[in-house]
Amino acid sequence: MNQQTTQIDTVKIEIVKSYLIALQASICQSLQGLEKQHVFNEDNWQRAEGGGGSVRILEGGDVFEKAGIAFSHVTGSTLPPSASAHRPELAGAKWQAMGVSLVIHPKNPFVPTSHANVRFFVAEKEGQPPVWWFGGGYDLTPYYGFEEDCIHWHQTAKTACEPFGEQLYPQFKKWCDDYFYLKHRNEPRGIGGVFFDDFNQFDFEQSFAFMRSVGDSYIDAYLPIVKKRLNNPFNEHNRQWQAYRRGRYVEFNLVFDRGTLFGLQSGGRTESILMSMPPQANWRYNFQPEQNSAEQRLLDDFLIPKDWLD
Image (cartoon, rainbow, N blue to C red):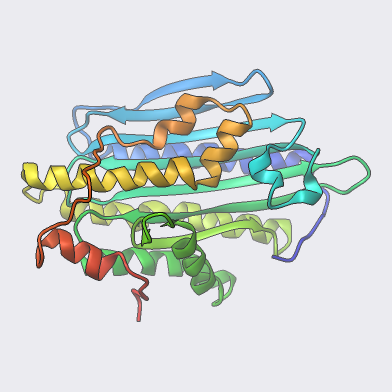
């Protein structure tokens, strides 16, 4: 990205913060519409080092076994290693980060898990202009493959990116494929989506507008898939496969995820950071699904590098 270092005043920061709080509320409202007997509970928290946030979580639902949508705005005096490692020139800078992060683990194995995040970061170092960027995206982790769902997911992401340049969707689709990859397993976590970070190639207003477009399109991408699959019949075999594949989700978040590492290294709130963990997961030694099964088809036909819109 082309680094721009324009002044970031408190008004701009508050505008971003207001958007993120509203986005959290709107996503919760959309998901709540599918749950008749269970509701999101809100847990507000403060961070001693500076800042705080709000977690809205639903557990044990009829549709969503666990759904967490978190907003946070935290500050610090020194960047943690996970951030300064890829931006060494900012080592020692004071910083603030805000964002909405969510992970949805449905009960039905035929409904995919989804993850989304949009965030804003500012670093300030004495004698230098402030450095800012946006980041985010969303990705889909199915347990059983449906081509039309993957096409819909990626088409929605592409539509969100297109007003800002035709090159953004293929660029950020590839970034997502590369980022959500379990190197130790030599396999992707899911079928991807879009992912971007350190984004400031436009001026502040246009960069913020791009982040909003991605954030606002998440429900359009995910909710139709949930509605289409939530009544699919399933059995214990399907649930066991779901739990096994959820283990991969845990491995990625604890080993590779930059947001998780940043949160833990910056003294963040552990309950909020690990909100993304599934309610149940399992690991089976050297497990191989049956040949020609729906489970094997997921691995062979879906968890591969692929242009879903070609």
